[in-house]
Image (cartoon, rainbow, N blue to C red; front, side):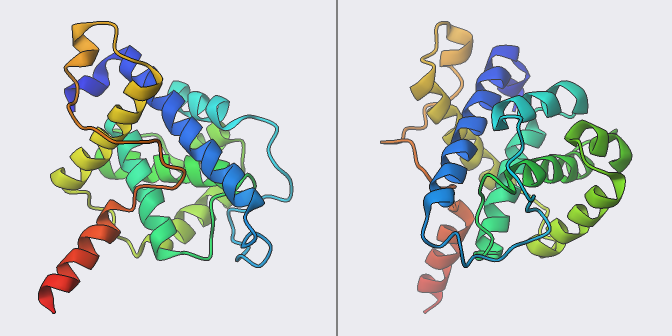
Length: 205
């Protein structure tokens, strides 16, 4: 969407997406399901010292991918948690999930993108590790990388609405972005596609 090209909007998007993932991670850190959950390739031995917001700002600064990639990366993270319910987003895996999802989104969305070695440097991990994480993430998604217009607009509108709740628009450029409304900020991911699939199954029955 053209609105994402606005620097203020992108800064707010990075801030909100970071805040959302922070709350999801902290919630799952305290969740009783945390201990028996599956330990995946994305899990680190210790919590990274860099905050989620600083990490995402670093990716945004150096990856130079299109703004739409961050919305698509959000869709991918949502799909991943649906496909892999035993892998909860927490403080030990959120950074690796972020760099991997953005890298894959850039490869799928952009005509020009950096290679894995570059993303490994941006993410502070080795080239061997990011190669492995990429494959693991793709299999975790079931290679479902396509994001149709309806799905993209739904996730984008949700993010924009939540950004407005945190940062009310101060000018017409931002206020014209979206009329999408929501009652509260959610602690979990959106799971829009999962809801749509369930509706289709009910109709089919």
